Every structure is written in structure tokens, then in C-alpha cells.
Length: 212
Ligand code: DC
Image (cartoon, rainbow, N blue to C red):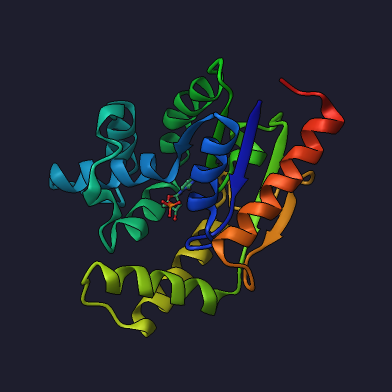
């Protein structure tokens, strides 16, 4: 079984995907970590995020063993990832890794921006998670405050809005729900309620399709 979970920054898709993977015993890939890692590697080499050729080279050389590096969650890395994610060559270099990952025997859940539309157009279940911008900014702000990061709510809000704009409006693989995706609005849901709604949806879909 392949499950695609897409949605904007701080919509809750990552937490949801991790919990769904545990619940249904599936492998999980946070595809945002790939783009974050490319941005990290460019910076480590002193390169420019706007250099498409260098970004593509970093994507081709990406070491999958470095995807759980905690620095990938540092403030600013999400924005940097969104910048390199606009280059078609970068997306192309990362696509096969994502598709290969999804072929595992156990089945897999991938979360990102273009999983239901481009990476796994034949996924058995597609969920597109949304939430109001203010609510997403508040969630991300609270997360960063707990980590002791020196951020303001206004700064976090502006960063998420900028990222939404870039991710939705790039010409290659823009963030958008697949035509057959289920929209899950988590604006008024806590993680438990969102998880219950997603499990319900997946169970119904598996029942209808009789998928593995
Ligand atoms: O999910 P995230 O916040 O870790 O993603 C960081 C950035 O990576 C996001 O703003 C855009 C890019 N991304 C993408 O373009 N496609 C994906 N499938 C996943 C992430």
C-alpha cells in the first residue's frame, strides 16, 4: 500500500504521516528532508541556493544516511529548501529515490508537496492536509519557542506565507491537491482528531480497493 500525504508547511502532515506509518506498519519518508538536506549541503560547500546546476549536483550526490540530521529542522532551512525545490533538475534528481522508497514490501507513506500529483500518482490513498495560515504559524511558533529559538510570531507567519507562495507558484511540480486527493482540514483539529479522521479515511479506502 502506498499513501501520499501532501500539504503546506505546519499543516500537521509530518506528524500525521509518522503516526499513520506506525499504525499501518508502513515505512515512512519525509520528502521535505531531501530538499532540506540539499539546501544544507549547498550551504556547507559555501554555494548559492540560486545556482540551479550546483543544487542539482548536490541533489544527485545526496547521502540518504544524513536525512535524520537534527540541523535540518533549524529555522531558515525550510525556506532554503523551498528555494532549491523550484529547480526542475533538483526535483528530477530526487524523484527516483522517492519512488524506489515507496516500492518497499511493507508499503510506505510519503509526505511532501507533490507526492499525490507527481511522485506517486497511483498511490492508493491521497490526503491533502490544510489549515488556516494563522493556525499553522501559531503551531510552528510554539514549536520553535519550546526549542528556545529566538523567533517572533510575525516573523514565523511571514516565513510560512512566503514558503506557501513559492511552493504553490513554482512552475515545476507546484504544491496542489491531486484531483483524487481527500482534503483534511486540521484548522480546528488537534493531532488526535486529525489522526482519527485520517485512519478512518484510509481504512474506508482500503476496504473499497482491497489493496495490499
Ligand atoms: O515539508 P517541509 O517543510 O520539510 O519541506 C521543506 C520545503 O521543501 C518545502 O517548503 C518545499 C520543499 N518540498 C517540495 O518542494 N516537495 C516535497 N515533496 C517536499 C518538500
